[in-house]
Amino acid sequence: MASRYRKKNIFINNSEYYAPLRKGRGVRQIRQYGTQTLVHPSIETRSKVKSDAHVWSYGDRLYNLAHKYYGDVRYWWVIAWWNGYPTESDVPTGAMIMIPLSLEKALKALGY
Image (cartoon, rainbow, N blue to C red):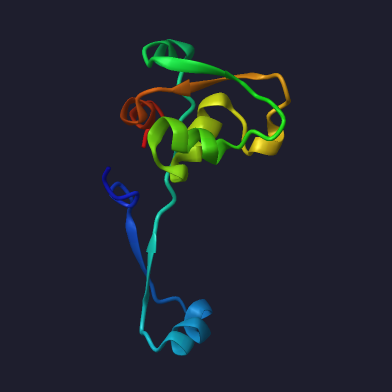
């Protein structure tokens, strides 16, 4: 899997606003990455990505599902974004969520 910063713009921040921060770090400028913009895939796009259905139950965690399906807890947000739930506390008990089986295809569909 490529770096999560691979498609991001890099900005060099030498604004006076950050002067105390730069001074504290002993640097003249700060390197910052642009914010990734994700898209909401259409129903047609989602239908082209094979998914597993999971009925959300008490105690479920997105990071556990990410580990189970992708082998990496860091991709919990893919499942959350795919289903339109910002966090696991937003998923109601009994809700059916879809878990894209191909992480690469899901990331592509999300514009990542």
